[in-house]
Length: 120
Image (tube, rainbow, N blue to C red; front, side):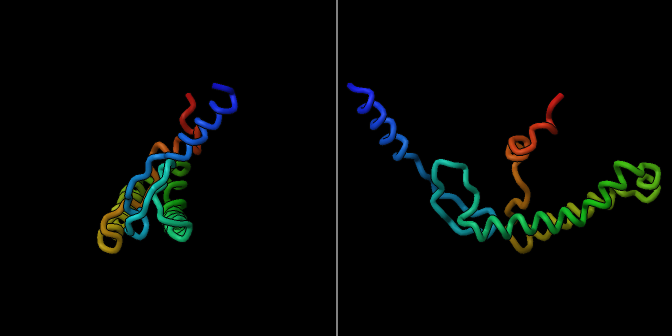
């Protein structure tokens, strides 16, 4: 077998990727997922998901910064309790309006995009 034939065989096998039927993490519709671990049926759902994360993150940001850099004030005002309540409220919204679908990225995805956070 020539090198050209070998490379053609690899290309053929690369095109025959296994697909799976999955449920979109944002809208809940079924879709065919290709070789990548896609969690959304399209770009519109990716945008909606990320916009939700951005809005919720903005609500948490100030509380988290106070908890990290103004610890005495955070302790006095029970900031961690407020952060946890806010997270619980977000999860309750997911259960009520999104059929309890996850509204956060998987830890593996975060680790892959922010490897410096995990460096020792």
